Image (cartoon, rainbow over all chains, first blue to last red; front, side, top):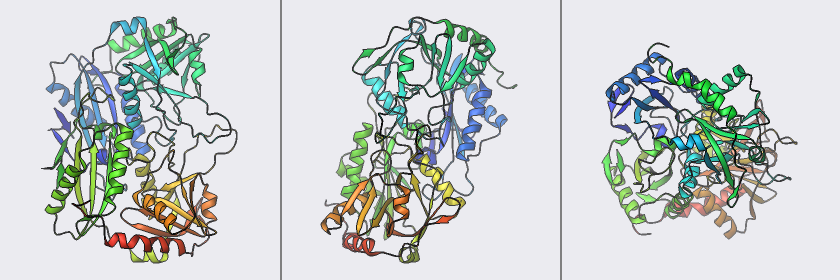
Length: 296
Length: 296
């Protein structure tokens, strides 16, 4: 079932701007024992998205009440994924927003996806997607509803039976020099890599999502004394790395064993797991004691 | 009222991928005396969009029957705007499409917008938007549902009471040389400009929509012997032009009298209308004799 602004509804007016233009934002939150994991980071990103799109959010407590209502209805699920979509609602003239938008908050609860233990132990193979991420500073970082790039990249994954893919930044070909292959993130995750004991992650300035686990790891790496530098890195930097992993709010930290690029060429086998294990250990207590649902 | 796959419906399941990811395409078609203007070009663009997104379209005749049904219900409207949205429907795992998608075709009929005769006679002032268009070759040309860039640009128009704005291509700032200000199109239109008797329009390779009137004018300019070159042009080329105009399927050809850029600086006053008038004249018979609705 679906909840729209706290009411049980099965459907949405077709006039909603979320459908017409992708005019809205979303979050996908891990819920463990009816507790929302890293809620404050999800709420922070919603606020950032609302600011960038000039969108009005419900009050935090109202939103939490709505989520609780949706979770209560599903009380047979010990673990679940809570998805929140907030759109600008209906109205406006063409692309122009209505003068007084009536946003819609849509909450759905989904079963926890099956995780393959082997993926965490052995690491996964990751392909390099042909679909690139267009540099758009006005939308970078936030989790907005314009996700066709990810849909196209996911088609590539499906076609090659891939688990996750690495996405590069789009670059118009009219520069005088060949375009750099700047790495941004995974199809539905952020990317980290380790070289000579240092941790690196692409900066989220022109494209990419400011992931909640990514933000969490930026803080934890610092606390653990692991040098971490967000920046503009090239595919070759990742191929040369000692350790590579993806992160997202549902699968957590997922190690990469190999990267498959251009015509099936393979990177070295990344066997090191030191840094990802250390970070995962630091994240785990949090996973077992997620922030209180009703008591922030 | 709204028609979904030929059925009268007021709403859409919230699980639709059009809402979740903007996973679909749309068309906005001028309907004059219940005849669809430039239908074959709209259909062509739907086909292109379906190809780029690997989306299944309904049969052309089925789609036309559904449109007719929606228009018949509104038979009191002599002129109308027909909007078609085609989404990939519901389902799939995250960004991955379902194995057998059940697309939804959503048809709504809207009143013809009021046009201001003065805009056509005097031309309009156009601002240069801060929001840029990200270069994304996989999505360029088609009219997909990821329209946040246009929504943000339209917010700029609203804030400055602008009629239409000019959008430039986004460029990451890490190049060695300053980014070129490449012009792409208007917020909801294509751009043309005339310099020394030659007609120019930005190419739609990395971003921008392959407009139906734009395609029509490319053909007509050739027939009229007007030299026309699509290419990568800079804002300065437009500022230096003798004649500037926007085109879209609803307002047709709209002349620009001035461009307002950086801190209210203004371009010269474009007084020439020769080429746009000549093209409009060539387009007008078509506007009065649109392609037959049921008889392509």
